[in-house]
Image (cartoon, rainbow, N blue to C red; front, top):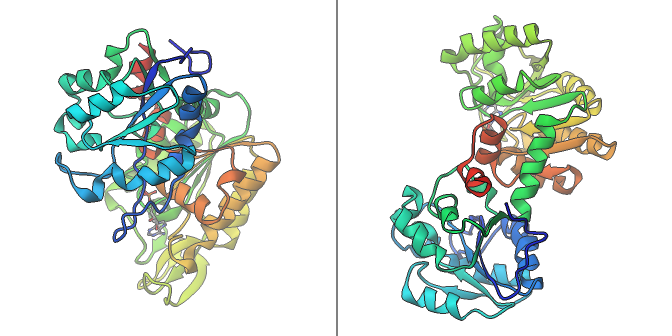
Length: 397
Ligand code: AMP
Protein backbone atom coordinates (compact mmCIF):
# COMPACT_ATOMS: atom_id res chain seq x y z
CA UNK A 1 0.00 0.00 0.00
CA UNK A 2 1.21 3.48 -0.88
CA UNK A 3 1.50 6.15 1.75
CA UNK A 4 0.51 9.80 1.32
CA UNK A 5 3.45 11.03 3.36
CA UNK A 6 6.05 9.47 1.07
CA UNK A 7 4.29 9.33 -2.33
CA UNK A 8 5.82 11.44 -5.09
CA UNK A 9 2.99 13.63 -6.44
CA UNK A 10 5.13 15.50 -8.97
CA UNK A 11 2.94 16.21 -12.01
CA UNK A 12 0.36 13.67 -10.82
CA UNK A 13 -3.38 14.35 -10.75
CA UNK A 14 -4.70 13.11 -7.41
CA UNK A 15 -8.37 12.15 -7.44
CA UNK A 16 -9.45 12.61 -3.82
CA UNK A 17 -12.73 11.29 -2.40
CA UNK A 18 -13.53 13.80 0.35
CA UNK A 19 -16.53 14.06 2.63
CA UNK A 20 -17.85 17.56 1.91
CA UNK A 21 -21.34 16.64 3.05
CA UNK A 22 -21.60 19.87 5.04
CA UNK A 23 -24.74 21.57 6.38
CA UNK A 24 -26.10 24.47 4.29
CA UNK A 25 -28.46 27.24 5.33
CA UNK A 26 -31.87 26.28 3.91
CA UNK A 27 -32.57 29.75 2.46
CA UNK A 28 -29.20 31.12 1.38
CA UNK A 29 -27.53 27.72 0.73
CA UNK A 30 -24.41 29.06 2.45
CA UNK A 31 -22.22 26.59 4.39
CA UNK A 32 -23.09 26.82 8.10
CA UNK A 33 -20.35 24.51 9.41
CA UNK A 34 -17.15 23.86 7.43
CA UNK A 35 -15.57 21.36 9.84
CA UNK A 36 -15.51 18.63 7.18
CA UNK A 37 -13.89 20.91 4.60
CA UNK A 38 -11.21 21.95 7.09
CA UNK A 39 -10.58 18.29 7.92
CA UNK A 40 -9.59 17.54 4.29
CA UNK A 41 -7.19 20.47 3.91
CA UNK A 42 -3.97 18.71 5.07
CA UNK A 43 -4.37 15.98 2.44
CA UNK A 44 -5.12 18.43 -0.38
CA UNK A 45 -2.24 20.71 0.59
CA UNK A 46 0.15 17.79 0.77
CA UNK A 47 -0.57 16.89 -2.88
CA UNK A 48 -0.27 20.50 -4.03
CA UNK A 49 2.95 21.08 -2.10
CA UNK A 50 4.34 17.89 -3.64
CA UNK A 51 3.90 19.24 -7.17
CA UNK A 52 0.59 17.61 -8.04
CA UNK A 53 -2.91 18.77 -8.94
CA UNK A 54 -6.14 17.81 -7.23
CA UNK A 55 -9.57 16.64 -8.38
CA UNK A 56 -12.03 16.63 -5.48
CA UNK A 57 -15.15 14.47 -5.49
CA UNK A 58 -17.86 14.24 -2.84
CA UNK A 59 -21.54 13.78 -2.21
CA UNK A 60 -23.76 16.39 -0.55
CA UNK A 61 -27.11 15.63 1.05
CA UNK A 62 -29.56 13.09 -0.30
CA UNK A 63 -30.43 13.98 -3.89
CA UNK A 64 -32.65 11.52 -5.74
CA UNK A 65 -30.14 10.61 -8.48
CA UNK A 66 -30.81 13.84 -10.39
CA UNK A 67 -29.29 17.35 -10.16
CA UNK A 68 -30.92 19.65 -7.60
CA UNK A 69 -29.62 23.12 -6.85
CA UNK A 70 -29.89 22.72 -3.08
CA UNK A 71 -27.51 19.75 -3.25
CA UNK A 72 -25.05 21.30 -5.71
CA UNK A 73 -21.43 21.39 -4.60
CA UNK A 74 -21.24 24.77 -6.34
CA UNK A 75 -22.78 26.08 -3.09
CA UNK A 76 -19.62 25.17 -1.22
CA UNK A 77 -17.06 26.20 -3.84
CA UNK A 78 -16.18 29.52 -2.17
CA UNK A 79 -15.79 27.86 1.22
CA UNK A 80 -13.41 25.26 -0.24
CA UNK A 81 -11.37 27.99 -1.95
CA UNK A 82 -11.30 30.03 1.26
CA UNK A 83 -10.05 27.05 3.28
CA UNK A 84 -7.38 26.17 0.72
CA UNK A 85 -6.33 29.74 0.10
CA UNK A 86 -6.37 29.23 -3.67
CA UNK A 87 -8.76 29.29 -6.61
CA UNK A 88 -10.86 26.18 -7.09
CA UNK A 89 -12.37 25.29 -10.49
CA UNK A 90 -15.75 23.63 -10.77
CA UNK A 91 -17.15 20.99 -13.14
CA UNK A 92 -20.93 20.96 -13.20
CA UNK A 93 -21.32 17.24 -13.86
CA UNK A 94 -18.82 14.78 -12.44
CA UNK A 95 -19.11 12.53 -15.51
CA UNK A 96 -19.73 15.11 -18.27
CA UNK A 97 -17.27 15.86 -21.11
CA UNK A 98 -16.57 19.30 -19.62
CA UNK A 99 -15.43 17.69 -16.38
CA UNK A 100 -12.98 15.42 -18.20
CA UNK A 101 -11.77 18.36 -20.28
CA UNK A 102 -11.08 20.32 -17.10
CA UNK A 103 -9.41 17.49 -15.19
CA UNK A 104 -7.18 16.63 -18.15
CA UNK A 105 -6.00 20.25 -18.39
CA UNK A 106 -5.10 20.65 -14.71
CA UNK A 107 -1.62 21.96 -14.05
CA UNK A 108 0.46 21.36 -10.94
CA UNK A 109 -0.95 23.39 -8.04
CA UNK A 110 -4.49 23.57 -9.48
CA UNK A 111 -7.68 22.24 -7.87
CA UNK A 112 -10.93 21.11 -9.46
CA UNK A 113 -14.14 20.30 -7.59
CA UNK A 114 -16.55 17.90 -9.29
CA UNK A 115 -20.34 18.20 -8.96
CA UNK A 116 -22.22 15.98 -6.49
CA UNK A 117 -21.53 12.29 -7.15
CA UNK A 118 -25.01 11.34 -6.01
CA UNK A 119 -26.60 13.14 -8.96
CA UNK A 120 -25.83 9.80 -10.63
CA UNK A 121 -27.51 6.61 -9.54
CA UNK A 122 -24.33 4.62 -10.10
CA UNK A 123 -22.63 6.20 -7.08
CA UNK A 124 -24.74 4.66 -4.32
CA UNK A 125 -25.31 1.49 -6.32
CA UNK A 126 -21.54 1.06 -6.51
CA UNK A 127 -21.64 0.62 -10.28
CA UNK A 128 -18.35 -0.43 -11.84
CA UNK A 129 -19.02 1.63 -15.01
CA UNK A 130 -19.32 4.80 -12.96
CA UNK A 131 -16.22 4.00 -10.94
CA UNK A 132 -14.27 3.28 -14.13
CA UNK A 133 -15.30 6.62 -15.64
CA UNK A 134 -14.53 8.57 -12.49
CA UNK A 135 -11.12 6.92 -12.33
CA UNK A 136 -10.18 8.74 -15.55
CA UNK A 137 -10.03 12.00 -13.60
CA UNK A 138 -6.83 11.01 -11.81
CA UNK A 139 -3.49 9.25 -11.93
CA UNK A 140 -3.65 8.39 -8.26
CA UNK A 141 -6.64 7.77 -5.95
CA UNK A 142 -6.81 8.99 -2.37
CA UNK A 143 -9.70 8.13 -0.08
CA UNK A 144 -10.04 10.70 2.69
CA UNK A 145 -13.79 10.36 3.30
CA UNK A 146 -14.12 8.50 6.57
CA UNK A 147 -17.80 9.44 6.86
CA UNK A 148 -18.64 7.22 3.86
CA UNK A 149 -16.00 4.52 4.38
CA UNK A 150 -18.72 2.09 5.53
CA UNK A 151 -20.45 2.37 2.14
CA UNK A 152 -19.46 0.33 -0.93
CA UNK A 153 -20.15 3.19 -3.33
CA UNK A 154 -18.55 3.80 -6.73
CA UNK A 155 -16.27 6.59 -5.47
CA UNK A 156 -15.50 5.16 -2.02
CA UNK A 157 -14.63 1.55 -2.73
CA UNK A 158 -15.24 0.24 -6.25
CA UNK A 159 -12.99 2.87 -7.84
CA UNK A 160 -9.91 1.67 -5.96
CA UNK A 161 -9.66 -1.34 -8.30
CA UNK A 162 -8.72 1.03 -11.11
CA UNK A 163 -5.67 2.20 -9.21
CA UNK A 164 -4.04 -1.11 -8.24
CA UNK A 165 -0.65 0.51 -7.63
CA UNK A 166 -1.58 4.08 -6.86
CA UNK A 167 -4.20 4.15 -4.12
CA UNK A 168 -3.85 5.35 -0.57
CA UNK A 169 -5.57 6.85 2.45
CA UNK A 170 -5.57 10.59 3.06
CA UNK A 171 -4.38 12.02 6.36
CA UNK A 172 -7.90 12.28 7.78
CA UNK A 173 -8.79 8.62 7.30
CA UNK A 174 -5.36 7.64 8.61
CA UNK A 175 -6.02 9.64 11.77
CA UNK A 176 -9.53 8.24 12.19
CA UNK A 177 -8.30 4.65 11.89
CA UNK A 178 -5.40 5.30 14.25
CA UNK A 179 -7.72 6.84 16.86
CA UNK A 180 -10.19 3.95 16.88
CA UNK A 181 -7.33 1.41 16.86
CA UNK A 182 -5.84 3.21 19.83
CA UNK A 183 -9.06 2.72 21.79
CA UNK A 184 -9.54 -0.88 20.64
CA UNK A 185 -5.99 -2.14 20.88
CA UNK A 186 -4.30 -0.15 23.60
CA UNK A 187 -3.55 -2.00 26.78
CA UNK A 188 -3.79 1.18 28.82
CA UNK A 189 -6.41 1.09 31.54
CA UNK A 190 -8.98 1.98 32.67
CA UNK A 191 -10.93 2.25 29.44
CA UNK A 192 -14.27 3.98 29.85
CA UNK A 193 -16.99 4.05 27.24
CA UNK A 194 -19.79 6.57 27.57
CA UNK A 195 -22.82 5.61 25.51
CA UNK A 196 -25.83 7.89 25.44
CA UNK A 197 -28.47 9.04 23.01
CA UNK A 198 -32.04 8.10 22.45
CA UNK A 199 -32.34 4.37 22.01
CA UNK A 200 -30.88 1.09 23.20
CA UNK A 201 -31.90 -0.50 19.91
CA UNK A 202 -29.52 1.59 17.81
CA UNK A 203 -26.56 1.07 20.16
CA UNK A 204 -26.96 -2.56 21.09
CA UNK A 205 -24.25 -3.96 18.80
CA UNK A 206 -21.69 -1.47 19.96
CA UNK A 207 -22.60 -1.94 23.63
CA UNK A 208 -22.21 -5.72 23.31
CA UNK A 209 -18.87 -5.31 21.57
CA UNK A 210 -17.67 -2.84 24.19
CA UNK A 211 -18.44 -5.23 27.05
CA UNK A 212 -15.44 -7.29 25.91
CA UNK A 213 -13.15 -4.29 26.03
CA UNK A 214 -14.05 -1.72 28.64
CA UNK A 215 -13.53 -1.38 32.36
CA UNK A 216 -16.36 1.13 32.81
CA UNK A 217 -19.48 1.44 30.71
CA UNK A 218 -21.47 4.58 31.37
CA UNK A 219 -25.05 4.57 30.09
CA UNK A 220 -26.84 7.91 29.74
CA UNK A 221 -29.49 9.69 27.70
CA UNK A 222 -32.88 8.29 26.76
CA UNK A 223 -31.67 4.71 26.69
CA UNK A 224 -30.92 4.73 30.43
CA UNK A 225 -34.65 4.53 31.30
CA UNK A 226 -35.01 1.17 29.55
CA UNK A 227 -32.25 -0.14 31.82
CA UNK A 228 -33.95 1.37 34.88
CA UNK A 229 -37.32 -0.16 33.98
CA UNK A 230 -35.63 -3.51 33.31
CA UNK A 231 -34.45 -3.45 36.91
CA UNK A 232 -37.96 -2.77 38.21
CA UNK A 233 -37.72 1.03 38.53
CA UNK A 234 -40.62 3.47 37.97
CA UNK A 235 -39.80 5.68 34.98
CA UNK A 236 -43.06 7.62 34.51
CA UNK A 237 -43.38 8.90 30.95
CA UNK A 238 -39.67 8.70 30.12
CA UNK A 239 -38.48 7.31 26.81
CA UNK A 240 -38.52 3.51 26.90
CA UNK A 241 -38.22 0.60 24.50
CA UNK A 242 -40.31 -2.15 26.05
CA UNK A 243 -39.10 -4.62 23.42
CA UNK A 244 -35.58 -4.16 24.74
CA UNK A 245 -36.15 -4.75 28.45
CA UNK A 246 -34.78 -8.30 28.18
CA UNK A 247 -31.82 -7.02 26.17
CA UNK A 248 -31.09 -4.47 28.90
CA UNK A 249 -31.31 -7.23 31.54
CA UNK A 250 -28.87 -9.42 29.65
CA UNK A 251 -26.45 -6.50 29.22
CA UNK A 252 -26.56 -5.93 32.99
CA UNK A 253 -25.89 -9.64 33.59
CA UNK A 254 -23.12 -9.83 31.01
CA UNK A 255 -21.42 -6.77 32.47
CA UNK A 256 -21.46 -8.44 35.88
CA UNK A 257 -20.02 -11.68 34.48
CA UNK A 258 -17.28 -9.85 32.59
CA UNK A 259 -16.36 -7.64 35.51
CA UNK A 260 -17.39 -4.44 33.71
CA UNK A 261 -18.39 -1.59 35.99
CA UNK A 262 -21.75 -0.67 34.46
CA UNK A 263 -22.78 2.83 35.50
CA UNK A 264 -26.46 3.64 35.07
CA UNK A 265 -27.68 7.05 36.29
CA UNK A 266 -29.03 7.13 39.85
CA UNK A 267 -30.83 10.46 39.59
CA UNK A 268 -32.44 12.49 36.85
CA UNK A 269 -34.00 15.83 35.97
CA UNK A 270 -37.65 15.18 35.19
CA UNK A 271 -39.96 17.52 33.31
CA UNK A 272 -43.73 17.68 32.91
CA UNK A 273 -43.35 18.43 29.19
CA UNK A 274 -40.70 18.21 26.47
CA UNK A 275 -39.79 21.91 26.37
CA UNK A 276 -37.58 24.63 27.79
CA UNK A 277 -40.64 26.03 29.60
CA UNK A 278 -41.32 22.76 31.41
CA UNK A 279 -41.55 22.48 35.18
CA UNK A 280 -38.63 20.38 36.38
CA UNK A 281 -37.46 18.55 39.47
CA UNK A 282 -34.56 16.39 40.50
CA UNK A 283 -35.55 12.84 41.52
CA UNK A 284 -34.19 9.31 41.96
CA UNK A 285 -34.21 7.76 38.48
CA UNK A 286 -36.26 4.74 39.60
CA UNK A 287 -38.94 6.84 41.32
CA UNK A 288 -40.35 8.91 38.43
CA UNK A 289 -44.06 9.63 38.79
CA UNK A 290 -46.50 9.25 35.93
CA UNK A 291 -46.82 12.48 33.97
CA UNK A 292 -43.07 13.21 34.32
CA UNK A 293 -40.24 12.27 32.00
CA UNK A 294 -36.50 12.14 32.57
CA UNK A 295 -34.68 14.44 30.17
CA UNK A 296 -31.21 14.74 31.71
CA UNK A 297 -28.96 13.14 34.30
CA UNK A 298 -28.71 14.97 37.64
CA UNK A 299 -25.97 15.86 40.14
CA UNK A 300 -25.30 12.52 41.81
CA UNK A 301 -24.99 10.68 38.49
CA UNK A 302 -22.81 13.47 37.10
CA UNK A 303 -20.45 13.13 40.07
CA UNK A 304 -20.22 9.32 39.74
CA UNK A 305 -19.66 9.49 36.00
CA UNK A 306 -17.08 12.25 36.35
CA UNK A 307 -15.09 10.25 38.85
CA UNK A 308 -14.89 7.29 36.47
CA UNK A 309 -13.97 9.55 33.56
CA UNK A 310 -11.26 11.40 35.44
CA UNK A 311 -9.67 8.10 36.50
CA UNK A 312 -9.55 6.80 32.92
CA UNK A 313 -6.65 6.51 30.52
CA UNK A 314 -8.82 5.86 27.45
CA UNK A 315 -12.26 7.33 26.84
CA UNK A 316 -14.76 6.69 24.10
CA UNK A 317 -17.87 8.85 23.98
CA UNK A 318 -20.90 8.34 21.77
CA UNK A 319 -24.25 9.97 22.46
CA UNK A 320 -25.50 12.75 24.76
CA UNK A 321 -26.56 12.31 28.40
CA UNK A 322 -29.85 14.14 27.94
CA UNK A 323 -31.82 16.37 25.60
CA UNK A 324 -28.87 18.73 25.27
CA UNK A 325 -30.51 20.63 22.38
CA UNK A 326 -32.80 22.22 24.99
CA UNK A 327 -30.93 24.55 27.32
CA UNK A 328 -32.81 23.33 30.36
CA UNK A 329 -31.54 19.78 29.85
CA UNK A 330 -28.01 20.38 28.55
CA UNK A 331 -26.18 20.40 31.84
CA UNK A 332 -25.53 16.66 32.19
CA UNK A 333 -24.01 16.43 28.71
CA UNK A 334 -21.98 19.59 29.32
CA UNK A 335 -20.58 18.29 32.62
CA UNK A 336 -19.59 15.01 30.97
CA UNK A 337 -17.98 16.89 28.07
CA UNK A 338 -16.02 19.00 30.56
CA UNK A 339 -14.91 15.87 32.42
CA UNK A 340 -13.72 14.25 29.17
CA UNK A 341 -11.79 17.44 28.36
CA UNK A 342 -10.25 17.52 31.84
CA UNK A 343 -9.23 13.85 31.66
CA UNK A 344 -7.63 14.55 28.27
CA UNK A 345 -5.68 17.42 29.74
CA UNK A 346 -4.43 15.03 32.42
CA UNK A 347 -3.10 12.71 29.72
CA UNK A 348 -5.98 10.42 28.80
CA UNK A 349 -6.74 9.66 25.13
CA UNK A 350 -10.33 10.59 24.26
CA UNK A 351 -12.27 9.77 21.14
CA UNK A 352 -15.64 11.41 20.55
CA UNK A 353 -17.79 10.14 17.71
CA UNK A 354 -21.34 9.86 16.55
CA UNK A 355 -23.41 12.79 15.29
CA UNK A 356 -24.89 14.10 18.49
CA UNK A 357 -21.89 13.80 20.78
CA UNK A 358 -19.88 15.68 18.16
CA UNK A 359 -22.60 18.35 18.06
CA UNK A 360 -22.40 18.49 21.86
CA UNK A 361 -18.62 19.01 22.09
CA UNK A 362 -18.93 21.65 19.39
CA UNK A 363 -21.78 23.36 21.24
CA UNK A 364 -19.70 23.59 24.40
CA UNK A 365 -16.56 24.64 22.46
CA UNK A 366 -14.62 21.62 23.63
CA UNK A 367 -13.76 20.01 20.27
CA UNK A 368 -10.09 20.99 20.55
CA UNK A 369 -9.92 19.80 24.16
CA UNK A 370 -10.45 16.13 23.34
CA UNK A 371 -7.93 13.93 21.52
CA UNK A 372 -9.99 13.20 18.42
CA UNK A 373 -13.45 14.06 17.19
CA UNK A 374 -14.49 11.56 14.55
CA UNK A 375 -15.94 12.96 11.34
CA UNK A 376 -17.80 9.73 10.63
CA UNK A 377 -20.36 8.66 13.19
CA UNK A 378 -21.78 5.60 11.43
CA UNK A 379 -18.41 4.60 10.01
CA UNK A 380 -16.73 4.95 13.40
CA UNK A 381 -19.34 2.80 15.11
CA UNK A 382 -19.10 0.10 12.45
CA UNK A 383 -15.31 0.10 12.69
CA UNK A 384 -15.55 -0.16 16.48
CA UNK A 385 -18.00 -3.01 16.12
CA UNK A 386 -15.29 -4.85 14.21
CA UNK A 387 -16.94 -4.70 10.80
CA UNK A 388 -14.88 -4.45 7.64
CA UNK A 389 -15.45 -1.05 6.06
CA UNK A 390 -15.50 -1.29 2.24
CA UNK A 391 -13.72 2.05 1.81
CA UNK A 392 -10.87 0.91 4.00
CA UNK A 393 -10.70 -2.65 2.67
CA UNK A 394 -10.52 -1.34 -0.91
CA UNK A 395 -7.31 0.54 -0.17
CA UNK A 396 -5.75 -2.24 1.89
CA UNK A 397 -6.42 -5.01 -0.65
P1 AMP B 1 -28.69 9.26 19.20
O1 AMP B 1 -28.82 9.77 17.82
O2 AMP B 1 -29.25 7.89 19.42
O3 AMP B 1 -27.29 9.41 19.76
O4 AMP B 1 -29.65 10.17 20.09
C1 AMP B 1 -29.46 11.52 20.26
C2 AMP B 1 -30.72 12.14 20.71
O5 AMP B 1 -31.14 11.57 21.94
C3 AMP B 1 -30.62 13.63 20.95
O6 AMP B 1 -31.39 14.30 20.01
C4 AMP B 1 -31.16 13.81 22.36
O7 AMP B 1 -32.05 14.91 22.48
C5 AMP B 1 -31.92 12.52 22.60
N1 AMP B 1 -32.04 12.24 24.03
C6 AMP B 1 -31.06 12.21 24.94
N2 AMP B 1 -31.55 11.97 26.15
C7 AMP B 1 -32.88 11.86 26.03
C8 AMP B 1 -33.94 11.63 26.95
N3 AMP B 1 -33.70 11.48 28.25
N4 AMP B 1 -35.19 11.58 26.46
C9 AMP B 1 -35.42 11.75 25.14
N5 AMP B 1 -34.46 11.95 24.23
C10 AMP B 1 -33.20 12.01 24.67
